[in-house]
Amino acid sequence: MEAQCGRVSRGDQTLDILKEVQRAYEQRMDRIEQQGGRNKLELQVEVLRAWVSDLVSQNSLLVRVVEDLELEATSRLALERRKHTEMSLERRAEAAALRRRLARKDADLRGLLEVLRRLREFDYCTLDGIHFFEVTESDIFGPSDWREQKLESGDSGARRARPGSHTQDEGCLKLIRHCSKEPGGVGKKKPFERSSELKILYDSLQKENSAKDREIRRLNKDMQQYEQTIMNLKNEMNQCHCRDASPIVKKDAEIMTTDCAIERECDKDEEAVKQPVSVDDDTADYYETLQQMEDNLKSSSSSIRTLRQVNVALSEEAHALRRVCAALDQQCRAAVTRAQFKDDLIREMRRQLKQAKAKQCRAAATRAQFRDDIIWEMRRQLKHAKAKLKEESLPRNFSKDLVESGDHEFVRQSGHGGDTARGRRATPRRGVHAAMDTPQQPESGSEGRGHRLAAGDDGMSFQSN
Image (tube, rainbow, N blue to C red; front, top):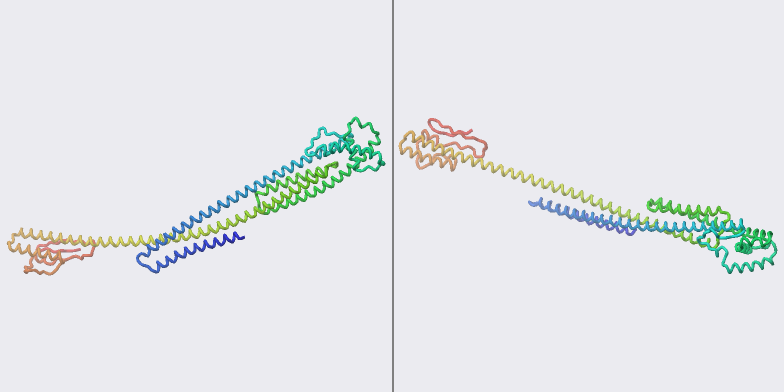
């Protein structure tokens, strides 16, 4: 819980830092908007570029953090899976060992039953063809010196005892005696003595069998209780949606069911004989093993719960980081849109300025061309007038005056554009002089206006369309 609170507080601090950065850039934009000026758009573009670069760096940092978290979660999950696999393998090995041990005990039990059957049917006992795993001949008949001592003491006590006062120990001694005899030596005793001994032996074995039956029933009840406990643990694991642990629990339940079936088969055998000490030791070992298995199941379930809580916390952090990244991406898109709009506006203003400059240049070029056309036309008219004077053979002085007056008029037309006739001397206004005195000037700012020169018999004049 404290770790989760620490993660939440760190997430809040990170969000506060991002908000402070955003607020600082917004304040800079507002300050530039309030100050204005010629470089307003350039400053805003620089601020937006810096903002976008900061957002890109923040996004890259967040992506790296998310990748690190995913890598850590994956490594932790792999470690937990490895531990869980090792624990499951250990449990399987323990279950296999228990099954082998139970199979050996079942084989020993069947061997003991075979010994009793031979004793009952053939009146002698041998271990030929019977294989025991954990039971030895000394466990069945006792040590050799103890058997000899008991046989001697049993023979002397049997002579002094009255008929019908045989105890369980005496029955055991009889069993030892019968088992130690050879088949050929049975006929040395009387038949009634042998029948009485067998009866006493049968009673003692019956009592032992009943005691062993009660012990086996108690063990079966304990096994059923443990089976129910394992089934309850299985249900808890299924409720926790633990996919990895469910096959293991199923296999454990199958193993326990098989063990219970083996015990039930042992219960069906009416003449089951086991040593009390070995049964108690096996039961204690089995209880201890079951307790260890229950502890392992509890520890694995608790570790799975903690791992699930860690995964939930990591997923929540990843979702929060994704939301922050989405908000930053949205802000970046808005900033890019505003910057693009401003760039388009600047581009449009530059285009309009270029168009205005081009239009002004075209108007100036048109005015210059118009002035050059007027000068060229006046020069052509002057040449034409000179040529006409020569053709008419005018007097020399008159032609000189005409030329001088024409030059002065040309200078006035080119310099000031149509002043009245002023000079050093006045000339008569006749014919050509009247036409050349005040030519009409076209408007300087008009475009696409043509000029045409009209000539008559009595003089020359300009006409404009």
